Image (cartoon, rainbow, N blue to C red; front, top):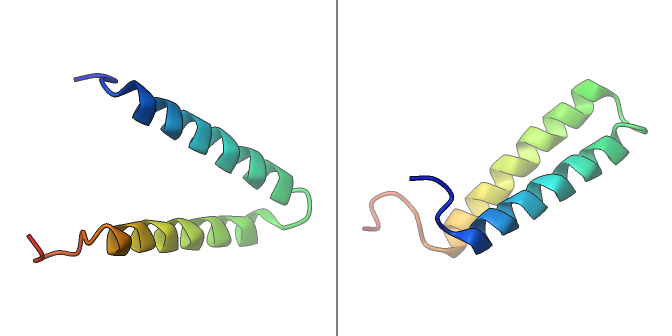
Length: 61
């Protein structure tokens, strides 16, 4: 299928670049284990919030 949506692809690339840049900055001040835990939890919370906002809950057709 490939990268058929250029704007979505660009948004994902910008988001990943920003995320890893922020993580690299945070690793200057926070231990890796703590940064990893916060990174994982923040990702789960953001995905859950996006799904809730877009009404993508299971069983809601």
